Structures are given as structure tokens and as C-alpha cells.
Length: 90
Image (cartoon, rainbow, N blue to C red):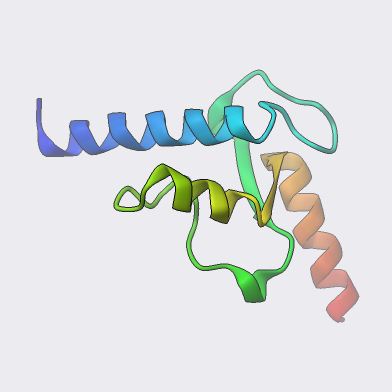
């Protein structure tokens, strides 16, 4: 197994654990079919320290602490959240 493959496996395992920790489905619409389509949205971007499912060097307790700053949403709902944020800035 290559290093890149090992990193991919680890990243998927971390994301799977965090998705389960956050309830396993989109907080807005309930989508839960494809884990790759589930994303972490920081409720307060100023408190974001790192992206929870992409940081492999942190302990699970630190990853959960960061995930606690987020809601789990599907990619469509996440885009709509950011679209609304952008519209409110205009």
C-alpha cells in the first residue's frame, strides 16, 4: 500500500467516525446516503481552528472538539448556507 492510499484510508476513517459522532445525517434535510456528500459547517468561522475531517495529526478528542463547533450538512444544504451568507453581505 502506498503512502497516499494509507492517508486516504485514514482520512475516510476519521470522517466516518466524526460523521457518526455528529448524528450521521444532514442537520437540515436529513440526507444520509453518501458520506462523501456530508460536510462540516462551522457555525462561527472566527472560532474555526482546522477542518475536522481533513486533519490527520490531531487526536480524536481534539477532532471532536472542533466538530462540536460545526453542524453536519449535505453538500447541497452547505452551498445554500454559504449562498445565503454571501447574499446577506451584498
